[in-house]
Amino acid sequence: MTEPLLRVENVSRRFGGLLAVDQASLTAEAGQITALIGPNGAGKTTLFSIITGFLQPSQGRIVYDGADITGVPPHRLARRGIARTFQIVQPFVGLTVRENIAVGAHLSRPARTDALAAAGDVARAVGLDASLDRPASSLTVAGRKRLELARALAIEPRLLLLDEVLAGLNPSEIRDMVPVILAIRDRGVTIVMIEHVMQAVMSLAGHVFVLSEGRIIAEGSPQAIAGDPRVVEAYLGKGAAARMTAAGGAHA
Amino acid sequence: MKGFAPILVVLALLATVPLITSSNVVLNFMVMALLIALVGQGWNLLGGYGGQYSFGHASFFGTGAYVTGILQMRYGVNAWAGFIIGIAAGALVGAVIGALSFRSGLKGSYFALVTLAFAEVLRIVASVAPITGAGVGTLIKLDLRSEAFQFQSRAPFYWIVLGMVGVSLILTRMIEDSRFGAYLVAVRENEDAARALGVDATIVKLCAMTISAAITAAAGCFYAQYYLFIDAGIAYGPWISIEGLLAPIIGGIGTVFGPLLGALVVKTLGELTKLVTGGAPGLDLVIYGSVLIVVVAFAPRGIAGIFVDLRRRLSGTRGRSRD
Image (cartoon, rainbow over all chains, first blue to last red; front, side):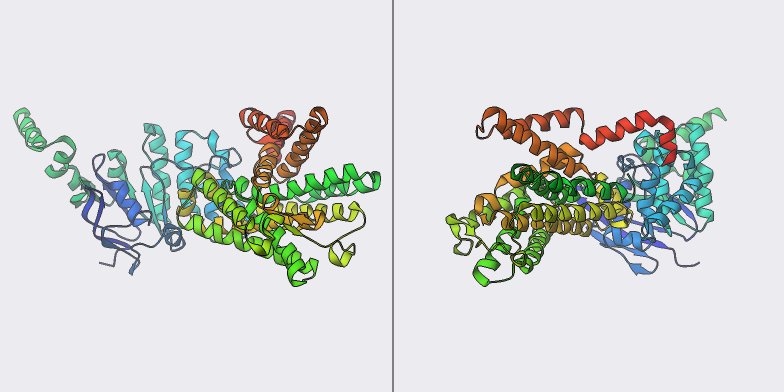
């Protein structure tokens, strides 16, 4: 097996008395989609913020492409090919869609015209080309999620961290978005995604990590994870798995 | 609005003013308006494009004014050289205050208060330090030769300050159309999102503050040459910080022409008030305040914003597809 592109090793993060992330470890294989799931408040976004340099870990280290990147600030990580989206979308509201995406495209393109042209190409890839010259503030929720994705893609990342890009979308919007994400993977971008929409996780992810109360409690293929009693209990409470098995047994 | 043609047209029109009138009152008024426009242009780069609202641009204005004055009077430096050094000194003060504030992560009202505090500290120091002439102030010796940056008539002064405004307009336009400008606006809109896209927010803000300070210091240097007298209250007083931020906010924040437009409006209102009330002290400030409230409440993007909206409405969808 080749060396994973991203390795998170025993990372902990404490906020005062709260241990938000507790000795969490995970890996993301190059060219694959890895999902990070878990109940609300499990520490998924905190872990993302640590990986992308917005937060410092209290303990542990992050290895990316063979190098220790623990504590490297976000803008440097972006230059090394790590992009992220935000769970709560953060568009530059005063700018047009094209100008939003161009900020990302500027990373490898100093000239304004090149960046604006590249922004158009990226917009096409995520299906935003029709709204290119509209203000970002006029976009719908689905449009804003796409913009978030487009901006991150514009820096031409090797590793893309998606924080709930499907949350808040209706089923048909999710169906439209899934092939967009698969196409990004097929272009060779390694993806780590936080996601609550299990149907999407099942169809997208090759490998799933489950975070609960700051700890990784399970990992495996999506199918294995869905049947794991520890995962069911993390979501539904202690004893839930046993009761479900019992109930299922009684019906059989 | 793209391109430099509108800037050149406006500059050409303004350049004809001394040819039309030789009235000292009119020229004096226009020189002061352009001076405020220049300070506003500096403020606008950091505040309008970068979203960092400074309440202390007097720090840079005063430094430019004092450095050019002191170098001439105490060290016999040529006025033009003093002018250049004054700009550099103002930029340096901007870089230092910027580094201290941005590296410690000050934003919003905290940044505004810190800049105000720096300006007040400088004002108090300048009012007691012997090198600035303390309470007496610094008087630049009358020497009406162009080598000494002094002129018989007001027209050359007018053209010089207009040229400085022109440079600042073109510079702003160039920044608007550059990667630095895009990064600066991104930082204003959302700093975290910008950082995630590879923008070093601290460096971007620091560069903006340094350029902003240099432009404002240039206005300070000019002021010293024009009036040949400065004291702590003029150089580092809050009046210049306030007028420098009123002009762009009223004219149109984050636009190329906003500060110039705003300065002309603000100065006209100020003069009209003086005319009507016979110069009751402080009443012009009341008028400024009222105008500011009206603008912030009804036209948050200032006078320039009203024009943009009007044009969009008049040209309809055709205008939208054009850009």
